[in-house]
Length: 246
Image 1: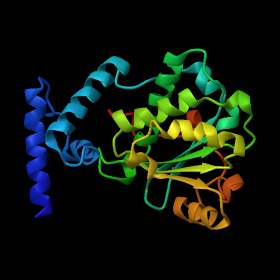
Image 2: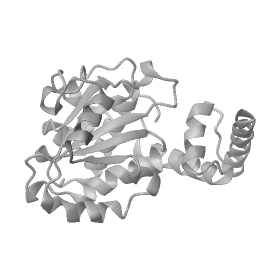
Image 3: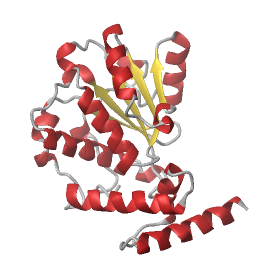
């Protein structure tokens, strides 16, 4: 019965997309299902979200992907790492906030967010059905100072995930949150949907740390986080396929 309901919702969503003057013909059911789930299986709301995503994608990523040459300043910091697939075949993305500084070029930063999310999702394709890939994010706040604080950047990243990468986030672990960052996080949290907040774990206890290590996979988790792997900078991470529409 549940499959029938999903099939009906998918059919209705495709019709709604056409009514909005667009087409979902090029996209498989797993992709459309992400938008439906993000909008509580409401075909009209999901169609609206999907068409907004198409328009955003066409404007933001006209070539289908953001190349490294478009985001040199952001890559230079070597602050993002892509570690391979977790126990649940989710790629693991690590951001070391101490290497990040509020960007002078907001447009390049936004492109960088797209670049890193697209590459992470593309790295998952060998592990799951195309269109259905999820990721695990790790935000490491160890040794950050006031110079590293970028509430606007954090909000941009999470808003992109919510609006343009629905149902892509499996879990986000925040490590080593200092006391002075709590107020910043409170501000950022106001911009996050309930469904996003429920996927975020602030790791503070030993028990949470054990769950984090076990949930990710020791073989791909870097040594500094309790695993056995080395850090793999985003630009050095191999891809099974070229970046795809996300």
